[in-house]
Image 1 (tube, rainbow, N blue to C red):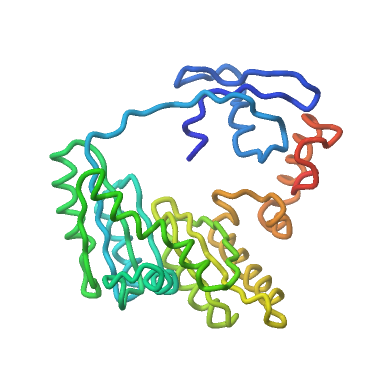
Image 2 (cartoon, rainbow, N blue to C red):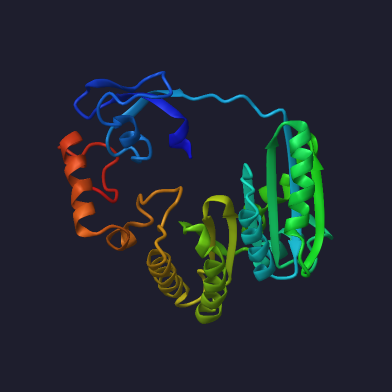
Length: 301
Protein backbone atom coordinates (compact mmCIF):
# COMPACT_ATOMS: atom_id res chain seq x y z
CA UNK A 1 0.00 0.00 0.00
CA UNK A 2 1.16 3.56 -0.68
CA UNK A 3 0.95 4.43 3.02
CA UNK A 4 3.56 1.79 3.84
CA UNK A 5 6.16 3.73 1.84
CA UNK A 6 5.45 7.15 3.39
CA UNK A 7 7.85 7.94 6.25
CA UNK A 8 7.11 11.64 6.67
CA UNK A 9 5.10 14.57 5.33
CA UNK A 10 5.15 18.33 5.19
CA UNK A 11 1.53 19.53 5.38
CA UNK A 12 -0.03 22.97 5.11
CA UNK A 13 -3.12 23.12 7.32
CA UNK A 14 -6.27 25.10 6.55
CA UNK A 15 -5.10 28.08 8.63
CA UNK A 16 -1.73 28.23 6.85
CA UNK A 17 0.26 26.47 9.55
CA UNK A 18 3.03 24.27 8.16
CA UNK A 19 3.65 21.03 10.07
CA UNK A 20 6.18 18.26 9.57
CA UNK A 21 4.90 14.80 10.47
CA UNK A 22 6.77 11.54 10.73
CA UNK A 23 10.51 11.41 10.09
CA UNK A 24 13.26 9.92 7.93
CA UNK A 25 13.53 6.90 10.23
CA UNK A 26 11.81 3.59 9.54
CA UNK A 27 10.48 3.50 13.10
CA UNK A 28 8.95 6.41 14.97
CA UNK A 29 6.54 6.27 17.92
CA UNK A 30 6.78 9.92 19.01
CA UNK A 31 3.11 10.63 19.56
CA UNK A 32 0.18 9.73 17.29
CA UNK A 33 0.89 8.51 13.76
CA UNK A 34 -0.38 11.76 12.28
CA UNK A 35 1.33 11.28 8.92
CA UNK A 36 -0.90 8.28 8.26
CA UNK A 37 -3.95 10.37 9.07
CA UNK A 38 -3.16 12.59 6.07
CA UNK A 39 -2.17 9.79 3.69
CA UNK A 40 -5.37 8.83 1.88
CA UNK A 41 -7.39 11.72 3.37
CA UNK A 42 -8.40 12.82 -0.15
CA UNK A 43 -7.22 16.41 0.39
CA UNK A 44 -9.87 17.00 3.06
CA UNK A 45 -7.49 17.67 5.97
CA UNK A 46 -4.49 19.53 4.54
CA UNK A 47 -2.31 20.21 1.52
CA UNK A 48 0.71 17.90 1.30
CA UNK A 49 3.70 19.84 -0.01
CA UNK A 50 6.46 17.32 0.61
CA UNK A 51 6.71 13.58 1.18
CA UNK A 52 9.59 11.51 2.48
CA UNK A 53 9.36 8.04 0.97
CA UNK A 54 10.92 4.71 1.78
CA UNK A 55 13.04 3.35 -1.07
CA UNK A 56 13.74 -0.36 -1.46
CA UNK A 57 16.37 -1.97 -3.70
CA UNK A 58 14.99 -3.85 -6.67
CA UNK A 59 15.24 -7.63 -6.23
CA UNK A 60 17.95 -9.11 -8.48
CA UNK A 61 15.54 -11.52 -10.22
CA UNK A 62 11.94 -11.56 -11.46
CA UNK A 63 9.81 -14.35 -12.86
CA UNK A 64 6.18 -14.51 -13.98
CA UNK A 65 3.59 -17.18 -14.62
CA UNK A 66 0.49 -16.56 -16.74
CA UNK A 67 -2.15 -19.30 -16.68
CA UNK A 68 -5.43 -19.42 -18.59
CA UNK A 69 -8.38 -21.56 -17.44
CA UNK A 70 -11.61 -22.78 -18.99
CA UNK A 71 -13.65 -21.32 -16.13
CA UNK A 72 -13.42 -18.62 -13.51
CA UNK A 73 -14.06 -21.26 -10.86
CA UNK A 74 -10.91 -23.10 -11.95
CA UNK A 75 -8.87 -19.88 -11.75
CA UNK A 76 -10.25 -19.20 -8.28
CA UNK A 77 -9.36 -22.72 -7.13
CA UNK A 78 -5.82 -22.26 -8.41
CA UNK A 79 -5.64 -18.97 -6.56
CA UNK A 80 -6.63 -20.69 -3.32
CA UNK A 81 -4.07 -23.45 -3.93
CA UNK A 82 -1.29 -20.89 -4.47
CA UNK A 83 -1.97 -19.27 -1.10
CA UNK A 84 -2.36 -22.64 0.61
CA UNK A 85 1.04 -23.73 -0.74
CA UNK A 86 2.67 -20.83 1.11
CA UNK A 87 3.57 -18.61 -1.83
CA UNK A 88 3.83 -14.87 -1.18
CA UNK A 89 4.07 -13.43 -4.71
CA UNK A 90 4.92 -9.77 -5.23
CA UNK A 91 1.97 -9.49 -7.64
CA UNK A 92 -1.07 -11.67 -8.28
CA UNK A 93 -3.74 -10.62 -10.79
CA UNK A 94 -6.95 -12.31 -11.90
CA UNK A 95 -9.39 -11.66 -14.75
CA UNK A 96 -12.78 -13.07 -15.79
CA UNK A 97 -14.51 -14.15 -18.99
CA UNK A 98 -15.91 -10.79 -20.10
CA UNK A 99 -12.59 -9.03 -19.54
CA UNK A 100 -10.63 -11.70 -21.42
CA UNK A 101 -13.05 -11.73 -24.37
CA UNK A 102 -12.68 -7.95 -24.68
CA UNK A 103 -8.88 -8.24 -24.42
CA UNK A 104 -8.81 -10.91 -27.12
CA UNK A 105 -10.80 -8.68 -29.48
CA UNK A 106 -8.44 -5.79 -28.82
CA UNK A 107 -5.16 -7.70 -29.06
CA UNK A 108 -6.01 -10.62 -31.35
CA UNK A 109 -4.31 -12.94 -28.86
CA UNK A 110 -4.95 -16.57 -29.78
CA UNK A 111 -3.99 -17.87 -26.35
CA UNK A 112 -7.01 -16.12 -24.80
CA UNK A 113 -9.47 -18.00 -27.02
CA UNK A 114 -11.74 -20.07 -24.81
CA UNK A 115 -10.30 -18.67 -21.58
CA UNK A 116 -12.81 -17.69 -18.92
CA UNK A 117 -10.29 -17.13 -16.12
CA UNK A 118 -6.71 -15.90 -16.05
CA UNK A 119 -4.01 -15.63 -13.38
CA UNK A 120 -0.79 -13.64 -13.61
CA UNK A 121 1.65 -14.29 -10.78
CA UNK A 122 5.01 -12.59 -10.28
CA UNK A 123 7.80 -13.75 -8.00
CA UNK A 124 10.97 -11.88 -7.09
CA UNK A 125 14.10 -12.57 -5.11
CA UNK A 126 17.44 -14.25 -5.77
CA UNK A 127 17.94 -15.86 -9.24
CA UNK A 128 18.24 -19.47 -8.06
CA UNK A 129 15.33 -19.31 -5.63
CA UNK A 130 13.05 -17.54 -8.13
CA UNK A 131 13.63 -20.19 -10.78
CA UNK A 132 12.97 -22.99 -8.30
CA UNK A 133 9.80 -21.30 -7.01
CA UNK A 134 8.55 -20.72 -10.56
CA UNK A 135 8.72 -24.46 -11.29
CA UNK A 136 6.84 -25.27 -8.09
CA UNK A 137 4.30 -22.51 -8.69
CA UNK A 138 3.54 -23.88 -12.17
CA UNK A 139 2.82 -27.29 -10.66
CA UNK A 140 0.52 -25.83 -7.99
CA UNK A 141 -1.42 -23.70 -10.50
CA UNK A 142 -2.05 -26.63 -12.84
CA UNK A 143 -5.49 -28.22 -12.82
CA UNK A 144 -7.75 -30.10 -15.22
CA UNK A 145 -9.26 -26.92 -16.66
CA UNK A 146 -5.99 -25.22 -17.52
CA UNK A 147 -5.83 -24.11 -21.17
CA UNK A 148 -2.34 -22.68 -21.33
CA UNK A 149 0.61 -21.72 -19.17
CA UNK A 150 3.30 -19.20 -20.04
CA UNK A 151 6.50 -18.60 -18.08
CA UNK A 152 8.70 -15.51 -18.11
CA UNK A 153 12.09 -14.94 -16.49
CA UNK A 154 13.87 -11.61 -16.35
CA UNK A 155 12.69 -8.02 -16.73
CA UNK A 156 12.07 -8.01 -20.48
CA UNK A 157 10.14 -11.29 -20.58
CA UNK A 158 8.06 -10.33 -17.54
CA UNK A 159 7.17 -6.93 -18.98
CA UNK A 160 5.99 -8.56 -22.23
CA UNK A 161 3.82 -10.94 -20.26
CA UNK A 162 2.31 -8.09 -18.21
CA UNK A 163 1.28 -6.26 -21.38
CA UNK A 164 -1.97 -8.23 -21.60
CA UNK A 165 -2.93 -6.99 -18.11
CA UNK A 166 -2.33 -3.39 -19.18
CA UNK A 167 -4.83 -3.81 -22.01
CA UNK A 168 -7.80 -4.74 -19.82
CA UNK A 169 -9.18 -1.25 -19.16
CA UNK A 170 -8.64 -0.18 -22.78
CA UNK A 171 -10.35 -3.36 -23.97
CA UNK A 172 -13.41 -2.67 -21.82
CA UNK A 173 -13.52 0.89 -23.14
CA UNK A 174 -13.50 -0.52 -26.69
CA UNK A 175 -16.86 -2.21 -26.01
CA UNK A 176 -18.54 1.19 -26.25
CA UNK A 177 -20.20 0.68 -22.87
CA UNK A 178 -19.74 2.97 -19.88
CA UNK A 179 -17.52 1.28 -17.32
CA UNK A 180 -18.56 1.83 -13.71
CA UNK A 181 -15.29 0.81 -12.08
CA UNK A 182 -15.83 -0.27 -8.46
CA UNK A 183 -12.69 -1.05 -6.50
CA UNK A 184 -14.15 -3.27 -3.80
CA UNK A 185 -11.93 -5.29 -1.49
CA UNK A 186 -12.88 -8.46 0.36
CA UNK A 187 -11.02 -10.87 2.64
CA UNK A 188 -9.07 -13.20 0.35
CA UNK A 189 -11.10 -16.14 1.66
CA UNK A 190 -14.15 -14.50 0.00
CA UNK A 191 -12.67 -14.06 -3.49
CA UNK A 192 -14.39 -17.15 -4.89
CA UNK A 193 -17.67 -15.97 -3.37
CA UNK A 194 -17.19 -12.55 -4.98
CA UNK A 195 -16.69 -14.00 -8.45
CA UNK A 196 -19.75 -16.23 -8.08
CA UNK A 197 -21.80 -13.29 -6.82
CA UNK A 198 -20.71 -11.15 -9.77
CA UNK A 199 -21.85 -13.84 -12.23
CA UNK A 200 -25.22 -14.09 -10.45
CA UNK A 201 -25.57 -10.30 -10.34
CA UNK A 202 -24.92 -10.13 -14.07
CA UNK A 203 -27.73 -12.60 -14.70
CA UNK A 204 -30.16 -10.81 -12.36
CA UNK A 205 -29.42 -7.28 -13.54
CA UNK A 206 -29.04 -7.98 -17.26
CA UNK A 207 -25.86 -5.86 -17.20
CA UNK A 208 -22.45 -7.20 -18.23
CA UNK A 209 -20.01 -7.29 -15.32
CA UNK A 210 -16.26 -7.53 -15.83
CA UNK A 211 -14.06 -8.49 -12.88
CA UNK A 212 -10.30 -8.19 -12.77
CA UNK A 213 -7.73 -6.94 -10.34
CA UNK A 214 -5.39 -7.54 -7.48
CA UNK A 215 -6.21 -10.96 -6.10
CA UNK A 216 -3.15 -10.87 -3.87
CA UNK A 217 -4.80 -8.36 -1.54
CA UNK A 218 -8.46 -9.09 -2.30
CA UNK A 219 -8.94 -5.81 -4.21
CA UNK A 220 -11.01 -6.59 -7.31
CA UNK A 221 -12.30 -4.10 -9.87
CA UNK A 222 -15.92 -5.08 -10.40
CA UNK A 223 -16.88 -3.15 -13.53
CA UNK A 224 -20.58 -2.77 -14.22
CA UNK A 225 -20.84 -2.16 -17.97
CA UNK A 226 -23.76 0.08 -18.92
CA UNK A 227 -25.29 1.37 -22.14
CA UNK A 228 -26.56 4.69 -20.80
CA UNK A 229 -28.60 5.25 -23.97
CA UNK A 230 -30.95 2.45 -22.94
CA UNK A 231 -34.03 3.55 -20.95
CA UNK A 232 -33.67 2.73 -17.27
CA UNK A 233 -30.02 1.66 -17.59
CA UNK A 234 -28.75 4.12 -15.01
CA UNK A 235 -31.33 3.01 -12.45
CA UNK A 236 -30.55 -0.67 -13.07
CA UNK A 237 -26.85 0.00 -12.62
CA UNK A 238 -27.46 1.78 -9.30
CA UNK A 239 -29.53 -1.17 -8.04
CA UNK A 240 -26.75 -3.54 -9.10
CA UNK A 241 -24.18 -1.46 -7.22
CA UNK A 242 -26.45 -1.37 -4.15
CA UNK A 243 -26.55 -5.17 -4.18
CA UNK A 244 -22.80 -5.45 -4.76
CA UNK A 245 -21.80 -3.13 -1.93
CA UNK A 246 -24.24 -4.62 0.56
CA UNK A 247 -22.89 -8.10 -0.10
CA UNK A 248 -19.25 -7.01 0.05
CA UNK A 249 -19.87 -5.32 3.40
CA UNK A 250 -21.68 -8.42 4.69
CA UNK A 251 -18.50 -10.41 3.99
CA UNK A 252 -16.40 -7.98 6.02
CA UNK A 253 -15.13 -6.20 2.92
CA UNK A 254 -15.03 -2.52 1.97
CA UNK A 255 -16.67 -0.51 -0.80
CA UNK A 256 -13.38 1.05 -1.89
CA UNK A 257 -9.89 -0.37 -1.57
CA UNK A 258 -8.02 2.24 -3.60
CA UNK A 259 -10.03 5.11 -5.04
CA UNK A 260 -11.68 6.56 -1.93
CA UNK A 261 -15.22 7.74 -1.21
CA UNK A 262 -14.97 11.19 -2.81
CA UNK A 263 -18.14 12.07 -4.69
CA UNK A 264 -18.88 8.87 -6.57
CA UNK A 265 -19.45 6.75 -3.46
CA UNK A 266 -21.20 9.33 -1.28
CA UNK A 267 -24.44 7.37 -1.69
CA UNK A 268 -22.90 4.35 0.06
CA UNK A 269 -20.92 6.14 2.76
CA UNK A 270 -23.65 5.53 5.39
CA UNK A 271 -23.48 1.81 4.55
CA UNK A 272 -19.70 1.72 4.68
CA UNK A 273 -19.36 3.41 8.08
CA UNK A 274 -21.71 3.51 11.06
CA UNK A 275 -22.94 6.73 12.69
CA UNK A 276 -20.15 6.83 15.28
CA UNK A 277 -17.42 6.44 12.66
CA UNK A 278 -19.02 9.05 10.39
CA UNK A 279 -19.25 11.40 13.36
CA UNK A 280 -15.55 10.87 14.12
CA UNK A 281 -14.70 11.80 10.53
CA UNK A 282 -16.70 15.02 10.89
CA UNK A 283 -15.01 15.90 14.19
CA UNK A 284 -11.54 15.48 12.67
CA UNK A 285 -12.54 17.43 9.56
CA UNK A 286 -14.01 20.31 11.57
CA UNK A 287 -11.04 20.42 13.95
CA UNK A 288 -8.53 20.76 11.09
CA UNK A 289 -10.71 22.66 8.62
CA UNK A 290 -13.44 24.53 10.54
CA UNK A 291 -14.39 26.71 7.54
CA UNK A 292 -14.59 23.75 5.14
CA UNK A 293 -12.20 25.21 2.55
CA UNK A 294 -10.21 22.04 1.82
CA UNK A 295 -11.65 19.98 -1.05
CA UNK A 296 -15.20 21.05 -0.16
CA UNK A 297 -18.41 19.20 -0.98
CA UNK A 298 -17.05 15.68 -0.65
CA UNK A 299 -18.22 12.85 1.61
CA UNK A 300 -17.21 14.68 4.81
CA UNK A 301 -18.21 18.30 5.22
